[in-house]
Length: 137
Image (tube, rainbow, N blue to C red; front, side, top):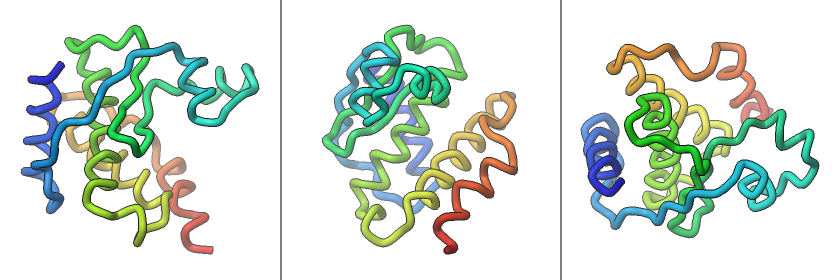
């Protein structure tokens, strides 16, 4: 896992202006329902609808689903997405940017990586637009 995280951090360093030389975050594998509870989603149906596969908790920890497979490129792209959030926070972006813009940046970088690896985008254009709609209000 460490080698995978280093390679993804190198990719982020080459594709962004962020400083990516900080220590790697901790990785915790857990169930989707536990991730939902940690994320603040306590209703089972809302958790199931959210399909949460990972998140960064701003405390040097990335939570990933217990079924995470380091060989699966879709799973790798999810880890990259969470590493983007880690790098955003490590570079102080959370204090100057709307959270929707941070999420959009993570999806854009994830999808750039996915395109390089012959994968389809992770979200559609409508969802991209909705991420920043609250930021423009």
